[in-house]
Amino acid sequence: MASATMLRRLARAGYRLTGPRRAILDAVANRRGHFRAEEILEEARRVAPGTGRATVFRTLALLTKMDLLEEVHLGEGSHGFVVGDGRHHHHLICSECGRVVEVHGCELPEAISTLATRERFQIAGHQLEVYGLCRRCQ
Image 1 (cartoon, rainbow, N blue to C red):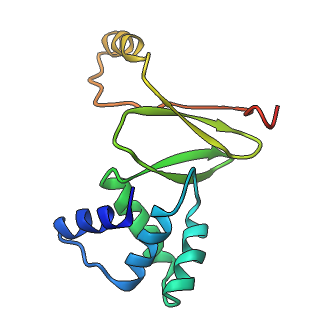
Image 2 (image 1 turned 135 degrees about the vertical axis):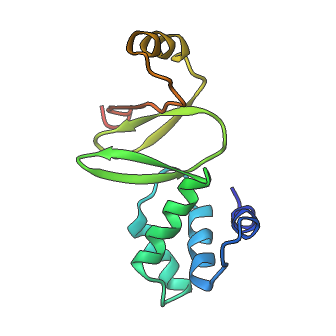
């Protein structure tokens, strides 16, 4: 997703488009695959030296809330982000190298429906993260 698209969505939602926030959006938009907040902080500071850690974390949280990013758990308490594409998918996460593979299509609705009925739980959505070893790390 282009940073211009993210900027438009933030502007339409009434958020200020400061220099550091623009640098963060550019850094996020240039990413392929997963990334960590610290990587975005380093890249944003090259463009906007005054960018603060809190600004990066708040902006990433905002982008996640707006469904422009997805948070992925990388194991051992660590997490990162991937740029969202708006389509429902799940993640395969390599426990060795941290590679995140998006798997489109979902075969879970029947199992989720059964679970909801059994537990008398109204489900609003789901996300699946599967951990293991990618081909390169096996």
